[in-house]
Length: 358
Image (tube, rainbow, N blue to C red; front, top):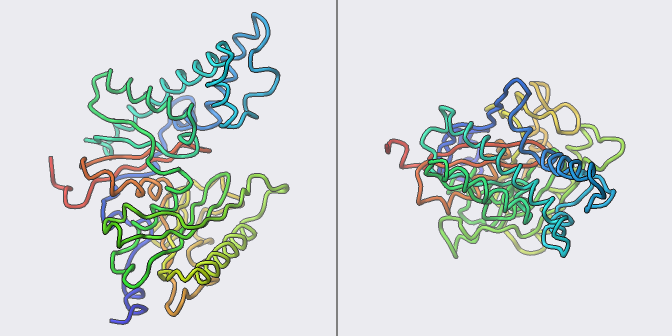
């Protein structure tokens, strides 16, 4: 069968529950209590609010060891520098915020573990931008200790890849294995509340048939949150298409053979037709509803890659980032991912071939 006919007849749905290596048991759970969304308590901004609260307690007694700069303006790098710096009181303030965050993360993790779709979870990986810092990794480690000390036989640890790369590498696990026959790479997109990243992922199948050696060859990022005024939805799509076309040209010049496949991770509940039902409120413009279909827009703008029709597949961004862990989670049956960024992404997986295990 010709490859373009295979692509048309593949029948791969957006936001599929059964993927080549795992079953997606649940994702994008929006837990609430009387104070609002639970996930808002373990976001990047929540950590800085905790840091500010720790500083406020010291200000009542004297000078703030972190100075006058607002906590929301501290970068991850600067927070790590303070944590490892020479001023013990300043480092202690950051440690206090880490402890507060770890306690909240452990509490949120327990709430997820109590959901039907998360029953039997043996491991949780934590991704998102917060995990890419010393402070974030310490908070994850402390929360993991709290869970185990509380009697839960579960591991909680940072995602293996840099979260920016994990959100792209996971796209290789959206595609059926036959898609890579004759190709060595594919296009991937990670859409977030702060930025849009697009990249070329090299599969390195000759080095590892399980895709464990997949890596980002090149990527481009556009921080739409820094634009003033905020770009419209159409402007965002145009920018994404421009990034993808640039990557196609670069891959061609480097003699990479791109598969006719674009995997997209996007916040929210993704419908089988590629529309976003809910959860896209942090994206530029209105992406939710039946009147907008990103996959169709990208396919219309990039109808072919090489000699074959392009296939665009979308899934939730936390699902895709979690999929980057697939080759490294063969020691467990059921595992999940929490992504800490603008909000809290989440997904739970069961490894294929183990769905019926107790």
